[in-house]
Image (cartoon, rainbow, N blue to C red; front, side, top):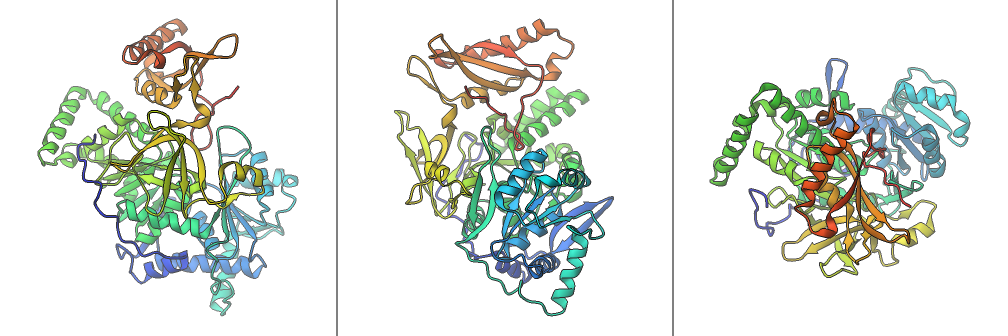
Amino acid sequence: MALKNYNHNYPFKEVKYTPNMKVVLEDSIAKKNEFGQDIAFRYRKGKDVIDVTFEQFYLDTKYLGSAYTEMGFKKGSKIAMIGPNSYEWVNVFVSVLNSEAVFVPVDKELPIEEIAYVINDSGTDVFFYYGANYDEKIKANLELFPNVKYFVSVDAKEDDGRFLSYTKMMEKGKELVDGGYDEYTNMTPVNEELKVIVYTSGTTGTAKGVMLSLENVMSAQNYGLQVSSTARTMINVLPLHHTFGGLVDILVGIKCGTTMGINDSVRNLLPNFKAFQPEAAMLVPLYVEKFYQRIWAGVEEKGITKLFKVMLKVSDALLKVGIDVRRKLFKSVHDQFGGNLRLIVCGGAPMREELGRFFESIGVIITNGYGITECSPLVSVNRTHYYNFDSVGVVCPGLDIEISNPNEDGEGEILVKGPVVMMGYYNMPEKTKEVLTEDGWFSTGDYGKYDRETERLYITGRKKNIIVLKNGKNIYPEEIEDYLTALPEIDEVIVSAIKDEDGSEVGLQCEVYPMQEKVEGLDEKATYDLVKAAVDNYNTTMPAHKRVIKVNIRKEPFEKTTSQKIKRKYN
């Protein structure tokens, strides 16, 4: 349980529902938003920090949208974008949301063949990209993109036939708008129609194009603001092609009037924290884990580990009696993140309880949530004044949750129904039927349970990962992995079943990538002995069916998806 655990009945925020981003931007410009700030986005260009007002951003969307609309890309046209997080990326995204076209975000980490699959499967007409490496890759593999009519480079200064300059397009759009061209600005996108196709980066199988309507997108924005606290300043870290980073982070920020700093690369993350001084950030647990490790490494380097642990205990004790000195006690830590960070909203993967408790102790609240691309993506979130570190929070208003075929512990597959649920998979009607019923229930493939008394949702694991032992016990490997990852000797781990000669699952084994700082200088046997001893110690705390019998050591990190989830191999 968290140090502060308020009553779950405190009301959701009242949020004005807005049907599209045009209305959102007009409200922001008129300062009818929550903060009444002028600056919408902040980003670094070289050594300079560039500020963009809400009014200028709205104009930029009109310039770009008018340019491609006048070129003939209107209702039903597909417009894609790839590249690192940038202001231009956001401009392309929101301009398409305000048009009658369809947006296709493309994962910047994909190899060229998979990029081509997304572009071709979606039927992309105009492909925007940012980065010289994409320019080289695309031009060297042009035969992979036979149906793209135009490629638009953010870096290019001049047009080159089929390859166009983003800068020139913006200049042309400004001329059109200033000259009275209004076909784009007069468009009102239809809420029920397809607006975004997001291709999943699952751990197995061919990527599926998740079809989201404008209603899906705007509903996720609305619910996100109803359940979560907002901040005057935030930093956008998550990749914009992810629904968590694009649909939730950016669009929620625009609606509430947040000044959003755009982080352009992992390398610049901490400098950007200091430059933008955010009050809040949306992250995946991987980032929080790295921050945690960095803080402790700094503490150990200074030789103040014992003192720091005492400070944590003092901080927690004072907080229990209503005295909060966390930001003073841990000022040097807060300064690493710009000095103002108070809230991290985490999603995309389970988060270790230890991380939540640590950051709470130093004055940064972490509220974990649950989402899935097919739900735009928001399903549930821990609230700022009602949270714990075991659950993924309260279900968003407007959504229905059912637990399908629950076992004796109330655990079963999580089903979701409501206005955030996708339209289906693009060009995959049979796949759609597998997960989406005619009356709108979506089968998430995630197992969990719902406590109606506390209104909290708990995630147990993925349906396809469940291990059923020969004795009938069901094991969720994610639960075991969570315990093992908390061990200081283990960096990454996958738990799987040991099978007998008949193929029956009879026990558990784990494959471990050790924490490199712990095994530096050790040979293979010593490394194995260290990790095995840690796992054996874990076993003493667990019932027999959750004990890990066999340990395998790997020399390289696991292969991961672009969202940094370990790719599991299935037999």
